[in-house]
Length: 430
Image (cartoon, rainbow, N blue to C red; front, side, top):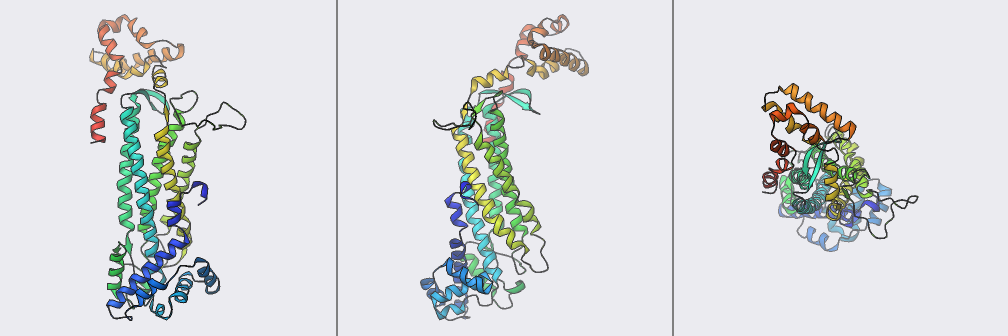
């Protein structure tokens, strides 16, 4: 992933240095188990742990000759650790090391992403409560619908990210497996207790049955969850972008003192961060199809999945982490304009109360069809001629013979729309 959209905490996880360190941890843990089982001499694991050094440059030099990354890694470790290192990898296959280590990297990444989600939940909770009763218009199809509050909008995002957090916890659990089962997964040359020891040592679970690899449906699930989280990021980002449009302008991304919005137009303040999140979300979601296609490999294994995972492993996790941190900062620092929200709420001069007016007319004896048509015709007239619906209805003698003026005023009131806000908030923030 390019540095512009990366945070060091995640790039460190996906560095070559960390990858080979995890490989070494797997090999040492396996050697410890083999020592206990009497399969290799005592002291191998401690000697390797003490003397081995990760030299990425040297590993790549050897790989250029032998064309095999795990062999190059083991050769490099033996050069530093000495003759005892020859007992490493006894009965194991490359995927035992590579797959187990890849899962560890996914777990490490997933735990950081969980912290990112926690930050978003904290910010959303704070902002939702702050704007709990700030009136704004609800929109469907981009058209004014009925009144809501800005806090309610934020609370819906909070609940969605709560679900995302749970999904990611499940995905981390799904991917937290270890396979040290040897070629084609039969344990022909490695004791199953080695796998058990490695799993416990590295905080994983044993893979109940592997082929020569850990089954890739697990990975497909993990990357699918990353994609869903990215979808939630974009949902919030698009809302911010729409609400910052000049003709709406109900909120704005924070714009620093010396920030410039356009090279050509000095007046511009563009929602560039939210637009960036839309693009980054697309990148994360693009990892899903390759991850799903990795499930179906030839027989007990091939390596068509390998090149895919070398790309989507770091890219999807690093990008999502960056996007989540950026979203938390946008939400924490956004500038909200309650007066503009109220102004937009009144933009259509009362036609947003059409449903309650229609329902009240049906209670007075009109059919639903007649009530609907009557209110619709008046609403169209208001919209076309920029008239006030309340005044139009008030001038209709037939309607006013059915509905009192006090009742009409209560219909054209926001209070009914907000009466259950506390109820909804209790459900979300219980």
